[in-house]
Amino acid sequence: MTSEALWKRYAAVWSMEGDGRETELATCLAGDATYCDPNGLIHGPAELSTYMGHFRQSAPGGHFQIRSVHHHHGRSLANWALHGPDGGILQTGTSFATLTDDGRLHHISGFFYPAEQGVQA
Image (tube, rainbow, N blue to C red; front, top):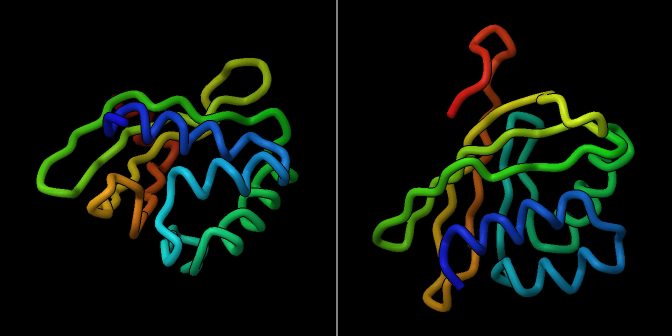
């Protein structure tokens, strides 16, 4: 899977129901993956799935669009936009990850842009 396809697949997981998330996370993430954003550090796909469930509750109908991906030497950077149910942009940001040898996301860090910075490419 290309880095762009991986990020798009991972981004789609954030909008999925719990049962579907588990299967997709196993495809996209290492078993010992970590996820970190300004809200905290999460260990493992199961804990991340729970966090994603809370996201779904706080942003009903929200979905991520991957806007660009850069990749080299087992590291990857994705610029994204969070869209609301009406299609409007609620948040923009960048996520960075190291990749496993088999191409799955290993250690992910998410960064959110302040609203006053506007929409980032």
